[in-house]
Image (cartoon, rainbow, N blue to C red; front, side, top):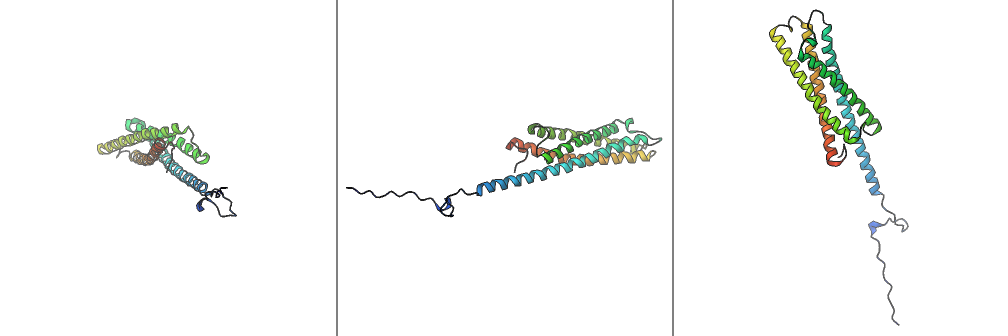
Amino acid sequence: MIMRSPQRQPQPLPEDRLRNGGIETPSPRPRIQTHFHSTVSEQKLRRFNILILIFRFASLCFSLAAAIFMFSTSRVSNSPSWYDFDAFRFVAIANAIVALYSLFEVGASVWEISGGTTLFPEVLQVWFDFAHDQVFSYMLVSANSAGTELARSLKDGDTTGTDNNAFSIQSDISIALGFAGFLFLGLSSLLSGFRLASFIVNGSRFHF
């Protein structure tokens, strides 16, 4: 009679089992790490969106103030008005358009921060923000540049800047505020460009 030696069963590795009465349980570390990574990403996304909101709001304030100052030049007695000059009309209308656009984007940013989702479908939102930021940035800097040239020529020609000091001051203030609005709109454009690039590369508008 041939005696067979009992076969040895493979023993689990020490790192694969939990020493708790010999009961093997899966390690909770991967789940904890995944949850931690998700929480950190959400916090970064929230801070990123708040930064965009700040730039949008600043652009709204400066562009709206620039438009108000330019429109109010018509209330100065015995002086020219903004609609008497093509460049100043461009400044007033461009700043008004950017103010309305910035107001919409402020609302969209608040919606995204509070609800965690974009106002439009994500692919449409990232392209909408980037494209409009680019177009309105170029429009605003072109308008303020044209207004600067006109204001300088009026002063050099001594036709409006000297005889109508109030009109000249208000025009200069409006143009300066318009450039400030362009600065913050340009910063918003950089961030919206980052969101678009992240969406194209990673399939999400925000990814680290």
